[in-house]
Length: 162
Image 1 (cartoon, rainbow, N blue to C red):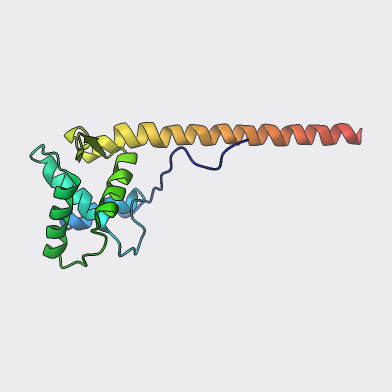
Image 2: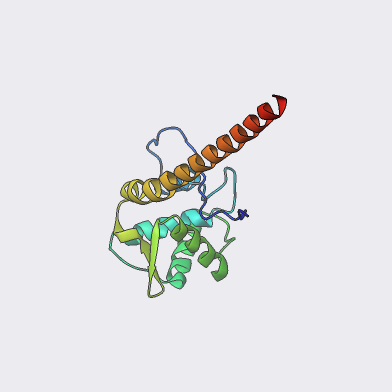
């Protein structure tokens, strides 16, 4: 019996080429592109969490969830955004989503951009190679199994007709 729970999941969206935009808007488009945010979603706290972690990367600084929450509040005030989604539990849930996509790492309850690396490198070396390629391979395995199953069914039907 095959379980219906996915081992991993990724949503990819293609947008227009990045243009000269404000930093937060570029981070938002990045999150939208990776399915971390839904188009038109007003609950975009994940954008600010990633934004804060990207700023911390410049100093190779690791942050606790409490520090992230405080810095996210500052960002949201600066951009005159609603203070929704700032509950500690929601911050941790969004951090887990970023970890699941291998964008960030956690050591000793401190969070940081994976290996303090550039996002382009993380996308190429982690998301593309581990998540996307492995997911596509598994989809191909299912496609072959489906084709084989239907080929067997077709063969047994033609045997019955003979």
